[in-house]
Structures are given as structure tokens and as C-alpha cells.
Length: 284
Picture 1 (tube, one colour):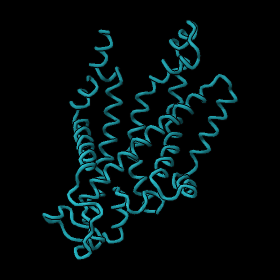
Picture 2 (cartoon, rainbow, N blue to C red):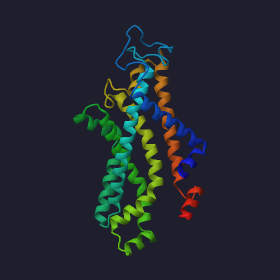
Picture 3 (cartoon, rainbow, N blue to C red):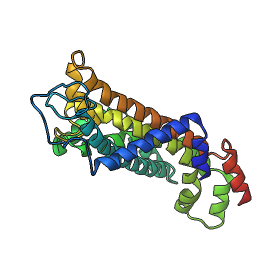
């Protein structure tokens, strides 16, 4: 509770919590209700301006923009959660192998990380799209591989510092195995780094979904997402700008909120910065 209280009492933290809370509410609401059925299109009412029937207008097929953006919020949440979980697992695995006692294993893990990091995310997505086709899974896997390796590279220096600290040496001397010391002493020290990087990963995954969908290897046609709404209207931005403004504004606001939330979370879980957390640890 002290962590959430710390985030709420900061201006940027309050903004991020409100935006992310609204996002979750819309995701839950879209599961049971949208203003218009997603499969309904009105060929006589394409590119319509906002009205009572269509508060955000319609796209080129006459579909209600608000309904599709509401349904797309669930797709974006699915991509963000799955990408962050997989990226965290990949990061932990590569950090663990980079701290291996064997110098050869550590060097191999470092070389593999640096090699794979040099591959652009678009190329990873193209390779995965060959067997999988355009799908949400391609977006998740390509983002998770790229961001997980980047997370491992960023977290490795702090993990190495924690692994050679005196309390880890004391735990090893008391009989703890290397992997137990890693799990109970090293990985908890990486929570501030992971929190910031995973929040950036979450925001970047939304941007990557929009880009990959625009290239035709992301979310397949007929699936609601912010990226698909943006890409289907991008070529008409000079004629019907609102159809691009709505999904673009949603992506921008949510990505900013995720980045601010990660920064506030990093400060909230750091006892040096968060005096309330430091006081609670002293009392315990």
C-alpha cells in the first residue's frame, strides 16, 4: 500500500494510474458491451463525422470507430501483458547464465545477447511471420525477444554487483546454493531496473504493434486493435484526419502513462528514495 500511496501522491503517478485504470475499465467493458456491434458496417455512412450515433465517427467501411477502439484496448492489453511476462523471463534467464560460475557459459550468454540485439525487431517479426503468418503471436514474440535481451543487457551490471556483494558471500558461506542466492538476494535487487524497463517495454510493444500491423505482419485483418485502426486510415489522413487522430491519441496517452508509471514505480520500490518504504522496513 505504501508503494501505491507514493505513486498516487506524485502528479505524474496520479496521471498514470488514472489513465491505466480507465484503460482496464474500458477493456473489461468491451468484453460485454460496445456502442455498435463490431461486425456491423454501414456502406452508406463511411468516413462519417462524429455524431450521437457514432461519437468518434466511422472508418472507410462504415464501422463505428469508438466500438473498434474499445475492442482494440483488450487486444493491446493482451499484447502488453504477454510481452512483459515473456521479456522478463528471457531477461532473467540470460542474466542468470551471464552470472554462471563457468566463464565460458557467461561469455557465450553475453555473445548470444549482443548478437541477437543487433537484429532489428522488424526482421525478427518477418522471420516469425513466415511460419506463423500475420498474427498477434508474431507481435508478442518479436517484442519479447528483442526487449528481453535488452533487459538482460541493462540489468547485467547491477546483477554482477549484487552477486559479488558481501551479503551474497555470507549467504553462500551459510550453505545457500548459487541458484538460491541468485533467487533470494540478486534478483530482488533488480526489481527497480526491471520495473522501469518493463514499463518502457509495455509502451514500446504498443508502438511496435502499430508499426508491424501497418507492414502487414502484425494483428491480422478483422481483429480490433489500435494499430489496425491507425493503419487502415493512415492513407486518408489529409482528407479524414479524425480517423487517425483518435487511435493515435490513445496510443500516445497510454504509452506516456506507462512510461511515467514505470518511473514512479522505480522510485516507490527504492527505499533510498521512498522514505515511507524505508520506515516500514526499519519497523520490521
